[in-house]
Image 1 (cartoon, one colour):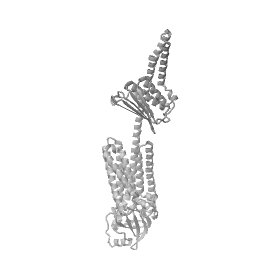
Image 2 (spheres, rainbow, N blue to C red; image 1 turned 135 degrees about the vertical axis):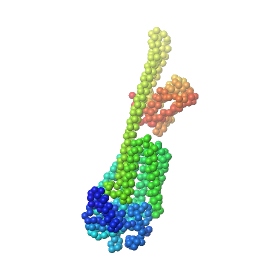
Image 3 (cartoon, rainbow, N blue to C red; image 1 turned 180 degrees about the horizontal axis):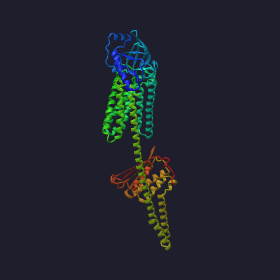
Length: 627
């Protein structure tokens, strides 16, 4: 009981109460007149705890306690893994009449019964536990609440039976003034709502961010946050209250299974965030094995539906396994934080702070559980507070990752723009070279031929037949040059006809044999067909210039999702590892990449050259009409 508003004075009053209680009776709490509650009082220091191996009646238990047949145990709050039944006896003495609430702050008790001792006989006041549906509780609260009414100067003794077999047993008991409990409970529920709202918001936001940026790190973080929020929602007893109030089966194993899943998501998230694969590949593989083992454990846990002694013994083994893997994960994280500090100092610092916050919250929570700290010092559960600080810091780490991704993306854009600029310059340079070649062709060949014809016609030298032949040759050269500039046959006759005509003309000019073959090759048109034609044109021109080949194989093969073109010759070849891409190779590769395809070639001295072009089927972007 506390008379002042400040925590310091409240603590002093509590110390005096404890001292006064110990001088009167070690199991009796005295509530003075006009006492004003501003916090709760831990009942555990004033309780007497006994155990029985068998489930006996309350009357038999009280009889054995009063006749000293049962030995009092030393622990007052937490007893670890047990299979016994525990009987807790305590007394209250109020100097004024009032209504109070006794709180058992452990939502996961299998069964319990609260008795009032009347005339040396226990009378049942309330029953509870998560072995019965939630709606059967006398007070609909995630914890176990027992309202009591005390008469002035009338001692009241209570007996509480607690049973939680094959699991860790703890029973933190607190005494509240009833109205003050209602006030604190409403405020706590508001804080819990805010806490879970923040976690769910962060989780959903991370999930959307991960899908938008297509970054699995954020998706992994979302699962980590959402499973953490679900774990605490279940750990605090809200899941049984709101999600499955009638399902005892779900309530029996949900918390443990969710803890398993949370550990799986923790391993997946932290090994990605800290880049275990780069800094500690062996640990990365070990954690990957741990994940698969825990997944198998969770599946077995869910499928095992016989809740007998064997199942509970398995649960103890499984929980100890979870603790071992959790400890391994923590040690692995700290190890990678140390070895990667120089390489990623900002991420390492943020993770260290996040872990520190959660660790401090867990330590404070344990101190409260053992009654070494007053719960009134905290407006929210310390471990929850530590977890929300951890999430805020980890969210900062993820935001930092987004910033890093954007910076890398901008660098990539700059590099891509620079590369595109270089390609454009190459394209312009190639165009200029083509214009120079055409100008030279017009000047050196067609121009000189016209000049010579002019002289012949003017001097009447040469026969009419010779002059007609030279005019025919000149027209053929002009058509060839026009064909090289714009292949009009592509529009008129189609791609196959154009290729066939070009190959025939190539064979006549170079006296080289070309074997051409079309296999399931569809008709293509527009810019797509023009790019393919230019690639073949350039490839054949390279062979004519450099290969000195006698046989050339040209194949056009159509597949379901792509087209493949191969161009092989038996020429002199070259050492492909020593030769850089020339302008011809560069042009063919650039055009292939414009079609989002892949250009490959191989060659060896004396063994000819092989080209392969793989391009996806034409789409609307490429299949545009030629200008």
